[in-house]
Image (cartoon, rainbow, N blue to C red; front, side):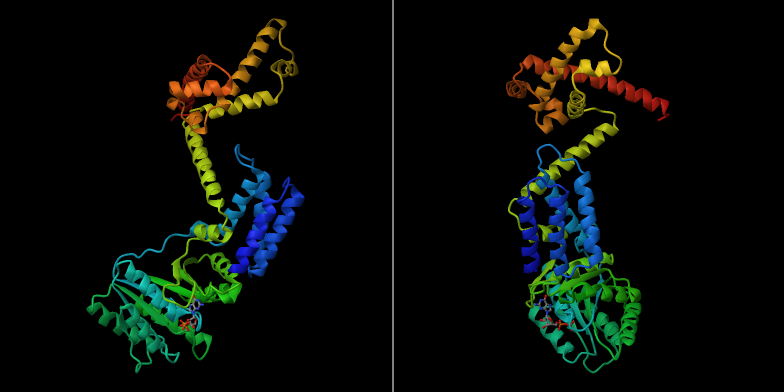
Length: 434
Ligand code: GDP
């Protein structure tokens, strides 16, 4: 994954060194990103879809106050990479009701036996009583390998090197291990056969007999995007619950493998990051991408966006309930200002009567004062004016070059406005028959 990491860092570097982030600059950043992802063996179609989404989002999104264009682009890059790795449907791996039976499938060499032991160790450390069952009767040495690993981690084990019928082994294994108090059964199955058809047939037979609670497919990251084919082939035979992607340490194609799995709709639950039993971790696309991007300031930026999203949600909630906030008021006033002087606005609408000219100028000043006061408030104060106490008023007045009286007056007007809005809202609801 090192090459993907350094590639993505070079993309970020390009973002940071950009000047105006116009179409030309963004295109060049996207081209660099495409190069990096294709090198990591991410499928061409996925790379293009991702590029289009990034561009569309970036050019259609307004830059929120307090954020730079760069911030927004980095956040979009982060979000889209997370989504490429299955972010939206990722959930932590949890077990259901006991007893719980997990069947591991995957082609030979994918790291299935090693993963069975790693998973057993992980679940044991999480307080479960785990048992391993060796049902790979095909690969020479598979039985001994799993037996040794079970002894090493101190979990129960069942296997029968004399028996060539995996279905019988599984049935017998569950019975024997249940007698030893095992709650979670992990079944290692064959990954090779005379031919693919008989392998898939065997997998189906074990599935039908065992009725496992989860089927985990083990795939090797060095296969890159090729793992999608494996996922699809197994999915046709058995309902895949999760996927483990192994050998992400050393592989330059890890990004391709992870995104290929996500594109099939399967969830990556764990990743293997080395040969040792502890080189195994729960897969969290959000943390994974954050680690890949590895920017020290990324975390701070993500937190800032999170706060923004929470505020936006809060505003949407208030708006839905017919409540206006000071933030709405501020935006409305800024909109009015954008139109130009009030007298001009009225002129465009047919011209103000001479008599109101003077008071219009007063109104103009008033708007400027209100905007200054609102500009001195924090986002929290704008959304929850009830927290504005005397000392906050003093701070706001000082910050806006106004007086505490001005701040008070604004808050009073706002309260009036809110009342009117509430009345309008109530009567509207009544009309709508709520
Ligand atoms: P199986 O045929 O699918 O049961 O595969 P094995 O569990 O025997 O693993 C095949 C090889 O891959 C072994 O040499 C393992 O040590 C190695 N292996 C498994 N998982 C990982 C991993 O996450 N990283 C690395 N580097 N090697 C792994």
